[in-house]
Image 1 (cartoon, rainbow, N blue to C red):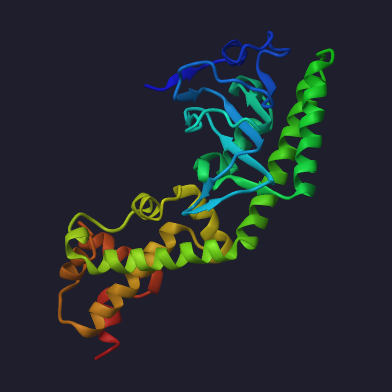
Image 2 (cartoon, rainbow, N blue to C red):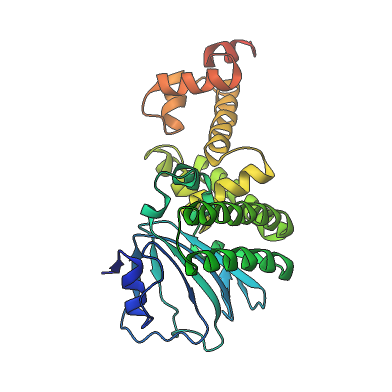
Length: 298
């Protein structure tokens, strides 16, 4: 069972660090960090943002990378963090920023933080930073650290929240850059998506269990649903669900125009439990009912 960490104080205790300067937010340096606990995995009831250097042989998608650049990761409360296979790397550097959800109460970030989809990305979908980008992020983190280390007053929370929002917006910008600069890897994902959908729609055994889901596609591609959605919106302007629907309609048009199967039979063959659901989706996408589309070929 993963070990559950509920507070900033508990993190400091486990890491052998002094009492935190602030009970709801803390930045921990990773250089020289030792893992003396027999804990393979933890669940944080916190937001966790990390910057690491010195992580050798990281997997990005299906590819392995040896890299020197900064690497950022984001976790929302309830996610599981697993330890390094061979323990903490000896050359590990960087920091981890821990934020208790209570710190965000009654602030603009309390609801806005949910719009940053990268908090739902998998570990291997981390953000790779250039030296310039890393400097930008580290400067913001330094401002946050300085603020909660100084005398806490009525302005402190607002100043820290403003810096957090700036950090998250920069991360959003840098992820968009990463989608573009890693074109080869991302285009391979798009090609595999096409192959996965085509294979699913050609397999009667799979379709008998229902149409393809976003989770099934993401699992098959070994990426998180949110990362896949972000990637697709960047390259196609569509969500994963929209692309699935598009492929289902293409297949439906083929069956309507080349077979004499009834609308109900076509709906069932495409994984729909009810023909009404199929007809509603078809009309919303084509502005015609399945029968009206078929009639246009006669």
